[in-house]
Image 1: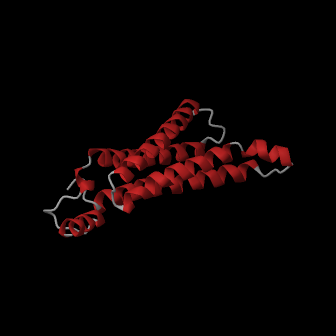
Image 2: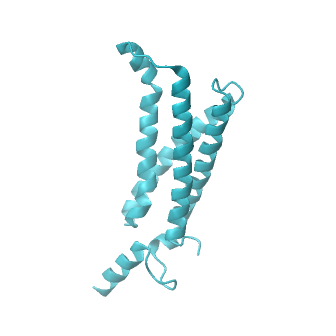
Image 3: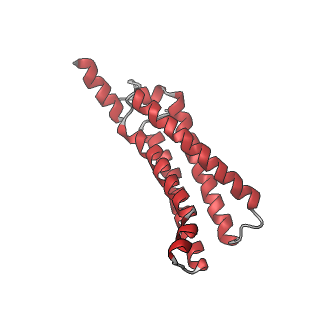
Length: 159
């Protein structure tokens, strides 16, 4: 019983500095949240660039690269969910991988939305859509970066 209590305290991230939780020992967890911070910065840069070039003509290669990296990061997030669940990490570490899987799936659906809009005869102003997606891109990228930073600090992954 004593070990169970010790694990739950360690998993909560509210333990003393001498007790190292499973989260602190995990190289994969550290790697995941560092990459999540980098991915957030990349998304932020991408959103700023597309704000300045709505047709993406100057940044086509960069935009395609970000799109491919997004797909890879979603697969990495699915692997992270399995890993975190298998080793029973603190619930806090599940938030960002689930966010990536759900959010990126929604972006794929939205990407095909023009086809769906044409099928049902809906239309909306292109400039407004560009502004909305730019604001969403900036906000979500900042969330990704700062939430990953919060998890790193909260679980003392490098301390």
